[in-house]
Image 1 (cartoon, rainbow, N blue to C red):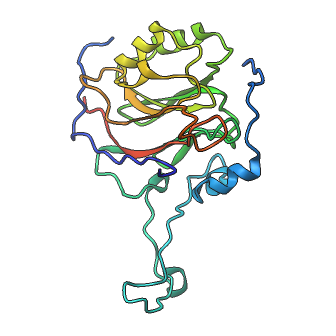
Image 2 (image 1 turned 90 degrees about the horizontal axis):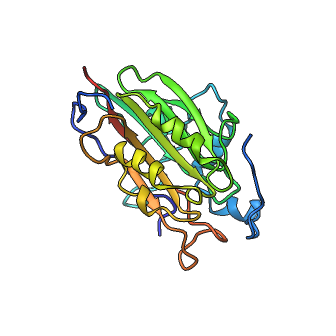
Image 3 (image 1 turned 180 degrees about the vertical axis):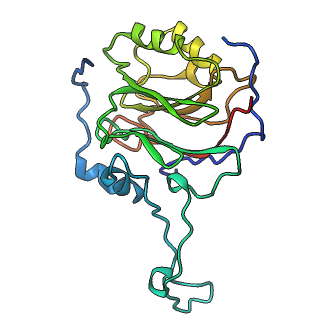
Length: 259
């Protein structure tokens, strides 16, 4: 199984919008968390660049080029020849077309490494910025201007779910919603919260379970389901870590809301 699932899906050039509006409590889990050294061994190489990036600086491109060509003749790496490697926003594999926003969302790894949300080459939420927490980490962005509106984290294991309900209810028409799970995203989930996320375009919120991983980008006012969503079940037969599934990574181009 690949360590991370990638999505680079471009919506149509115009938004499929409707035109009418519509102290965390941390308890120790029973399972013994995986050791940091063991976890780092299976983390992808780009994680180091995220954990070391300055909060105000964009993610660095970590792409590399093999020095060996198809004929196995030795070739110099572009960094040695002076050739400049392509650089895309958020370190993504491709650049986005005009009137689209680049994003990358990475879920947490077990209960050890926190999630990260990048939008238009700016890290909105991460461990370095110290604005993440166990549960659901959510960033709200203006769908027309791309301006960050608000970030918050909601403890879905022992927190007050009514705070999340109030947060979701207050999202205004035309707002992008970027979400990354960390540790446990479902224990406090209820039907009202599921309904809010379904309205934002989620297809998987209804099947979330204990310690599942989930990354999602939706919007208030969508006519259809969002294509930007990944979900992986907590399954002891397939888990990457001890008691948790592998982390998820999703990148893509979200179309700007054109009035």
